[in-house]
Structure formats: structure tokens, C-alpha cells
Image 1 (tube, rainbow, N blue to C red):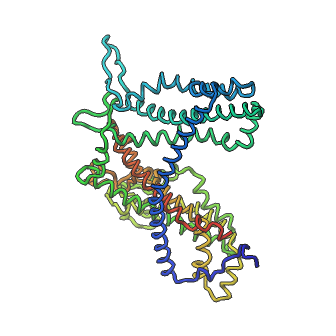
Image 2: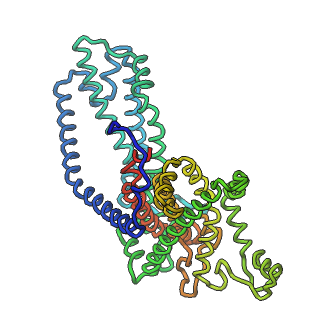
Length: 521
């Protein structure tokens, strides 16, 4: 047999005691994460060196083009596109497009960019004042607007600088082509190149612009807000006074993470529960959904489509409707006449007259009952997703593996541990990691079921006992009433981003699905 031919792994390749497999898995994970972190740290000096050399080569080439260029190329250093639209009709459109970029950039900088960027250091000083005629107010500086447009201006300056350097290179290459007697490309040829060989650049230009505008720009602004006093109470004075706030450095970070502050101990408690919730919410859905799929896919089970449909119906209903319905179904009241439907079923159908359980724990401050409640309800609504994904995997596991394992005397448990589970994990490993990071930011389940509660008497002004980082962030910024604390919310948002980024990048890259992607082909 050719060594390059792919073969199906035998079930005995995974025939190890489960405790050994677990220990090896944990050890390999720790080792891989450590090696990955070390490789990143070790690569930093070399990356800095490469960037310095690349900048040096770029500066050298920039001045070499200026020295060797003719008068058209020289003018192109001041008027972008001049070296194109003065050399022939075929280059006019390209030259005019470069000139339009320069003209629009200059207009933007004069009327928007420079005025806002000039106030970036202070975020504005002019406060809102009453109009002398007694009607309305005279607008002052808007710090949030200054911050937003300053970041946008910096991004546009970087973009314009890249286009400017590229334009000088285009002008010089056009000059060399003209001097060598070669024909210059026409607009039709340039358009054909953009739609064929350069199609990947053309088609990605608009999505890249959208990502920068919709994702990167708000993310940078959110990070910068964490370094301001946007929302801080100072005695009876609340920022921003008439939309004005300023820089305070790392004071917001110190307050949020300091043990002596109101949020110092709360953030670690919320982080701990967030990770516990993410683990249980992920693995309960995964394992129960997997076992549900295995039960439905057994050859002896009849009406497979019917059973799948029964569970898929849960997915068909929007999340907020399902969760609000479940919250009302399990609601609690000290007045048994007003209690939820589930308690009434226990009382009337099963004769449990004295049973009236506060399932969500919001009234009786039952913390662990509330946490178990959200985990169980999340399992009910999340299992069908895993069931559908796992069903497709089970149908594609080679029967030869099961046959060989039966011949060697493996029972159902051993076949599951050695064959079924490795196949499922290989395919669903990346999805499992993505689900885990998604559950860290699972806003809907907590918000609609418990609202973050219960809140104990010691939790006045603090997050509730089922609050996740993301629901606490919502409380601080949106649900705070008259005095939202945007800067503290930005700190918590940045902290949440770092936690999810760690699990998304580090854990995913250390999974077998990435390192051994050809194994189960």
C-alpha cells in the first residue's frame, strides 16, 4: 500500500484506560498552551526586527524613487496621480481616482479631522452654556464625538499614508514602463485585472471597509472610554456635564480591580460564576445532546423523524419568547393563587398542596437554586443543536470500526469511548470551543430567566448572583437609570473580551481538529 494513502484508524488506537486518556489530555493541553505562549513571546523580538527592516526598506525605496524619478514623478509626490493622467489616455482614470482620494482626504482633514484631532488630548474644554437670550443652550464640546472622530481620523491617516506611498510607486513604475517603450495599460486592461487576477482584492475591499467601520472603530473607542471619567460620580456632580468628559488614565481599572472598591470583589465573583456557567452550559448541552442523538439513531428506534422534530421545535421558536415563557411557567409567588404553572401542576395534579418552590430564586434568595434553574433551562433549549450536529457525524462513522471492535470483544461502553466519542470530538471540537466562548457572553438566558438575580442584602449596588460579565456590563451602561457608568462598563467589556479571546485563540489552536485535520478524512 502507498504510504501516502489515507487509511481508516482502527479502534484499538484509542484503546486505553479512561484515566490515562484523561491525564494525557490534560497534560497535552497544558503543554500545548505553554508552548504556544512561549512561541508567541519568543517571536516578538523577531517580529519587531522584521517590522523595523520593512520600514527601513520602505523609506529607502521612497527616496530612491524620488531621486530617480522624472518631473512627472516628482509632482506625483505632491499631487497624487499626476504621473498617471499626464502620460496617456489609458492612465487617466487611475490618476483621477488617486487625485480624488487626496482631495477628499484634504477636505475631510480641514473640516472634520483636524478640528477633532486637535482636541483629542483634552477631549474638549468648552462646556454647554445658557443662551444669553434666555432660550435654549449654546452647545459646547462633545467629548464622545471628539473621541469617535479622532479615532476615525487616525485610521484614515494610516489608510491615506498607505495609498500615498503606493501612488508614488505607481508613478515611478509608469515612468519606467514609458521610458522603456512598453505600452501603458489601458483602463479596460486595468478593469479586467481587477475583475480577474486581482479579484480577491476587489471583492474584499468593501467587507474590509465594513469591518473597520462597524467592528474595529467601535472596539477602539470602547477601549479608550475605559481610560476616561465618562459616567463617574464626583460628589453631586455627574460626568459628562453637558457631554464633556476627560482622560483619567488607569483610575477606572484600579477602581474595578481594587479589593477596597465597590466592584473589587464583585468582578472576581462574577468571573468565577461566568466560567462555571460557561462550562456547565457547554458540556451539559454537548453530552446530553450527543446521547440524545445516539438514542434516536439506534437502528431499533422507530419514527426517528418524529422524535427529531419534537426537539427541533424548541429551536424554531425565538429565544426571548421561549425564555420568557419558561420564566413565567416556573414563576413563584407567596400567594399560591398567583404562582407559576409548574408549581400549580405539582399542587393540583400530584397532590403536593404545600409545595411552592421559588425555582428562579429571586424572591427567596436561593442562589444555587437559581443557578441550577438557568443551567437546566439552557440545557433544554440547547440540546437540539448538538443533537442535529451529532446525528450527521454518527451517520458517517465507518461501520468497519464497530465490526472490528465487536470481533475483538469490545462492549458498548468501550466502543463509545474508543470509536464514537473520538470521532465526535474531532469534528465538534472547534464548535465546542466556540460554544464555550459564546456562553461566556450568553446574555439572553440570564437576562430573560432571572434578570441577573437573586440579589442578597449584601449586594446593594452590586451584580446579582446569576449575573454574567456581559449582563453586569448591560446593567452598568444601559440599565443603570439616570447615571450609567460607561467607563466602568468599558473596563468590564475589555476584560470580557480578553477572557473570550484567550479561550478562542489559545484553546482552539491547541485542539486536535487544527493540528490533525487530515486524520479522519
